[in-house]
Image 1 (tube, rainbow, N blue to C red):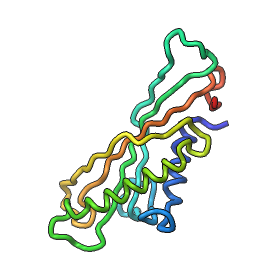
Image 2: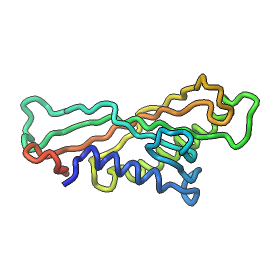
Image 3: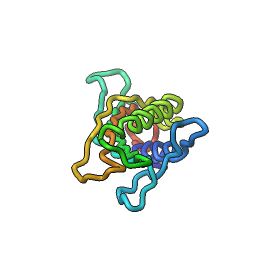
Length: 159
C-alpha cells in the first residue's frame, strides 16, 4: 500500500514531467530538484504546505476522513535571450507555464484516481535579488487537493 499524500505528490510530478509541446506551451524539465545547476527549464518543485481535515463535527460519514491539502508548485522558467528588463520579460513565460499547469490539472482533475479533485487557487510572481538575467525569479502557484481516506486504514483512498 502507498501513503496517500506521497502518491498524490508522485502523480503530480509524473504528470508535469510528461508535458510536451505536443499539447502544452513547453517541454517541461526537471521536477523536484532544487539544484539549479542540474535543472532543465521550465522546472517545478512540488511541496505540500498544509493538510487539513474538513470533516463536519458529528457528521454522518464516520468511515473516512475528508481532507484538503494545499500544494505549492514553484515554477522556474527561463528566458532564451538576455532582455533589457528581465523581471518584466519573464512575465510571458510565467503566464504560459501557468496556463500549462491549469490545463494539465484541468484534464487530470483527480490525478488518475488518487484524489477527489485538484483545484487551482493562486499564483504569485516572485522576483529574485540574485541578478540572474535568464531566470529573474519564479512563479509560486498554489493548488488545493481534496481526498478521503479510510479511518481504519489511512493508506486507503475512499472514493
